Length: 107
Image (cartoon, rainbow, N blue to C red):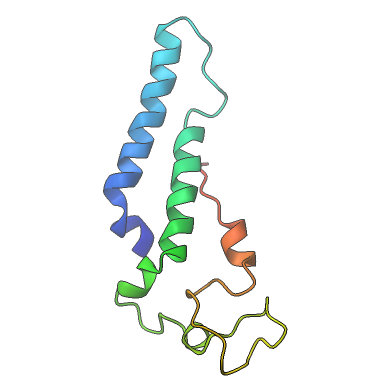
């Protein structure tokens, strides 16, 4: 919900552009794709990933965010994930598994 409310104008624009592109294709005699919202899905996925990567989520006033692990620099991609000298990292990006599997789609 937080992402959707924070990026609602951008999400709306992505949806409008995606549908407009499909309509333009049809008006020019082309065949629409099986998924008229594919362009929007791709744009929204990119927005979600940047929302986390750029630490925007950490400034939304959500309790527990930034996470304590992020503040402590816990990073399982390093040889010593819990070392005190590890630099702070963005919340929700530890192994990058969560970030890499983020995807937006409409059903």
